[in-house]
Image (cartoon, rainbow, N blue to C red):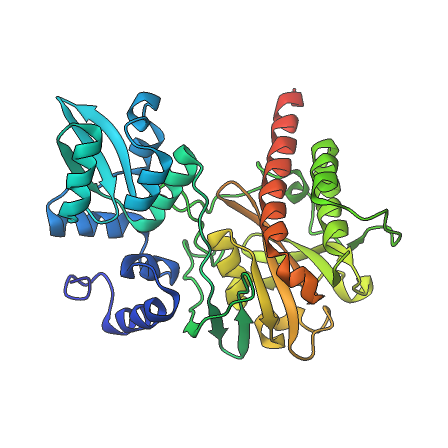
Amino acid sequence: MLVEAGVIDRTQLNEALRHQAHAGGRLGSNLVELGFIDERTLATFLSKQLSIPAVTAASIDRIKPQVLEYLSAAVAERLRALPIREDAGKLWVAMTDPTDKHAIAELEKLVRLPVRPMVSPELLMQYALEKHYKVRRKPRVVEVRTTGSDLLYIEDGTRSAPRVASPPRPAVAGGPAVYLPSTGSMEVDALDAVTGYLDEAPPVAHVAPAALPSVLTMQAVAEQLAAASSDEAVLDVAARFLAQDIQRVWVFLLRNGELWSWGGRGVNPSAMNGKHVAMNELALVAQALSTGEVLAGRLQPAALGRLAEPLGVTNEVLGVIIPVRIGKHAVGVIIGVDLTLDAMRRKGEFDKLTLKLDQALHINYLRRMLLAP
């Protein structure tokens, strides 16, 4: 139907179907992840096809606490359903499958009200479940192949069949070549107002002191991030934590659609001075920034493009790509190469670090706003 409506073409549909066969999830979600369609367009299309109203991100953000009490987190997650509002004795519920009569019947039995379903794309539903019920997204375990590159997501020692991934299309001309998931719109505005270090000219490579303190636990990292009063200090804590199990760690900041070298450990700083590369040249990095998920696994030099040589990647290595974001804003990325196997098994800590970086950078931003004249 999407092809007939001219929303996507046949080639995009076939690629999304291959993507879905290996990675799982709904077809619409795979189309969004591949950059062939955005969530708002998908929701509008489904709404018209099913003659069912579509939920909006704004309505999700305005849900009243007493309405959320109609469903427990476990039920909401299992049925992929979210109560939106009570109106004239009816409960409006957003659902990823609003045609599921059995789920609707179960909901009506639980809430003791007639249920009126609403269309919700899967990714918007996940945002809602995370926001209101603290339901964490379960990362899919897939192997991603791009031209000349190969990265395997590893989770609990398992692996899946390969999938094909395409570089995301630019959200706006001249902007970052990456979709930034948000509450219904693409956020690609200037980030200078959000992060202090982006107010400066493109930095030369910054190198933290070589000496490492005693072993940094995640609790110690959290305490140091809470005490860090500058963005530079926040990034340095992250680099020191990662360098305990990763031979080479480097931080890149996103500026006007390009990644600029900032600093790190284990890499020759002179090789990194002034290094920058356009985001549309690094599909895997773009994907990490788009989804906010850590990518860890086997990494080929081609996946790093012009960054491979200064990072010392000449053959396949174990690598990790850690997105640095403030909420829905992409800020930069941390790339680590030559991981130990123990580090690969502790990917959960990288996920926690990503969240804590977001929080620490946001705190610094609020501190600057508070102290501004």
